[in-house]
Length: 424
Image (tube, rainbow, N blue to C red; front, side):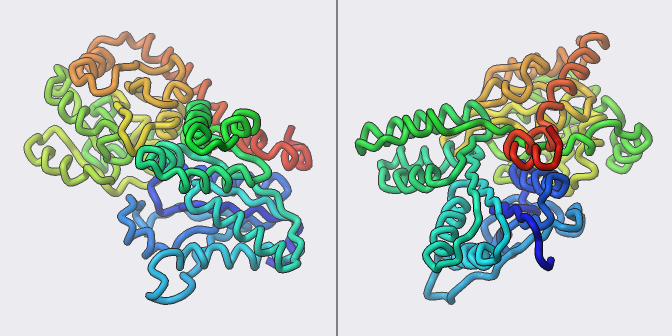
């Protein structure tokens, strides 16, 4: 683009990564085009690098296109084999310096502290030191696994130096944000541990500065689904409405997939409903092996963003028995909010991390790792719950989830841009 007036750069693990926060970046980018930004860029990783990392990825041939005005950049690594780590990060940082060197007012949003916030702060520092005088505002969003994986592992392993670097980099931004109130409290608790060991003052700064911005969702993709489209999508999979329980998420133990597989074997409703596991992840092969022994279990690894809401709408129940693990805790549950918008059968989930911030009182809650309780809850939803109660849960869930619509979330995260565009 020639002579843009205002630019938003989001540094993130973008599509094709199967991660709710890659969807966050897409949704914020799309809304930015309606809020005065005429150049929006997602600065992310080359696809071969994402593949080599073993991350769960969407089918490459079915990725949804971005609107004109949004550019996805995947800078090549800098250096050769003698720089085993940091080559791709150097590519991202260098490209951002080039953008900051242009005389364009810029907002930089980083999602994931490691390494994306480092990319932003290093680039801003380099641009200023070089004399470019960038007109830039930085926003860092801790999306959950920043704390539940990276910071916690630093504290668990006694690596307080690394934790100090994380907090100083995070707090160096103009604005610091957490994806949920649970995540905010975890950030503060982690900062208190670092302070106690190192004599630093991170906790007070976090308590004063960190705000909450929930994940933005494109509600239009989940609302007012055409019944004919739902039926057609189900027919292609050999499914019928209310004829299956749906697990649609990353297929990992932290999401409770092994608990659900065990519970399904005990359910009275299994003769009436199949179990559909949709997604990929580290526990996929384990699930596939179990599915070979149970013809009532269907495993789908190729569900795209178009089919996802249709499967959600047609299920008898959506089940996400997420549980806390050392390397992951559900800090919000974007898929839960998407299901709330799509409608269909009730949600059965656990009170883990920030899930209640997503579902409130609109889901059936079971204890994490309670296989018997999970089986009983799904049986009640499928076999015994009155139609009026199911409808009440569906309507209240959709109303609650509208608070996470991407336009509302964007305007809360970037209020000045919303005012400039006349959105508030």
